[in-house]
Figure: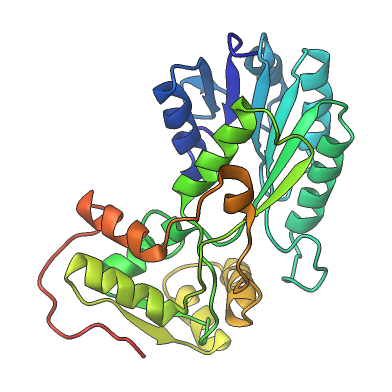
Length: 291
C-alpha cells in the first residue's frame, strides 16, 4: 500500500492540508484533491470521483456538510480497490440533543460512519471537537484580529483540539497498522472558556483581545445588521449552542490512544500561531480580559 497514492479529500482545508504536508514530509505519494486543489475533486460532481480514486490504496474522507455522498463514494472506492479509509466525523453525533440540526449535518455524519463501518475495508474514524484553528483561520479569526470576540457563548468551555494533532492522528491511521476499527474522539488536554482562550491569545501576541458574551438574539441581530441573512444568522447561533452549554468541555483520550502522547495545549497553539504571523501583533493598549 505504501507505493500507492493516498487520496486526501478536502486537501485545502484545516485538517486536509496538514495531512498532505505530513504525508509528503514522510516521502509518501499523495493525491491532494479539492475543488480548487492540485487534483480537481468535487463532491457534487460524481464525474470527478473515478479519477480521484484510480490506483489509490488509502483515503482520508472529509465530507461535505449536510450531504449523504459518503456512502456512494465509499462503494465506488471499494470497487477501485481502496483498502483503508479514514473518515473525518465529529463529536456529538451520538447525542441527539447535542445541537439543533435543521440542515441534517449530524444525520449525514451518522450515515457516513455507518457506510465506512460496513464497507468491508480497514476503517478508522476521527471525531474532533472544536478546532483551536477556529481562532486563527476559521469561525472566530476575523473577530480575534479585530480585538473583540462577540459571541452568544456565555462561560461555556470547550477542549479545543489543535488541527496539527488531528492531522497526526489521521496520518498514523492512514499509514500504520493497529488503527483499524477504532474511533478516535479528539480533544485538547483541558477545556477553556472563550475568555480564557482570548486571554491566552493576548498573551501570545502581545495585544489585547477581549471576549464579549452576547444574548443569542443580540448576536443574531448584529449579524443581520452586518448583512447576514436572518436564517444564516440563526444557524450561526445554533452552532454556538453546544459551546454555550458546555457540551464540548469534556476531555477525550483519542490523541493518547492513537499517538501515545498528550495533545498540544491551546497555549502551544497560540504561541506557534503568533510566531508564524497568524495574527497581527501590536502593543496591547489595555490588559487582556481574564474574566
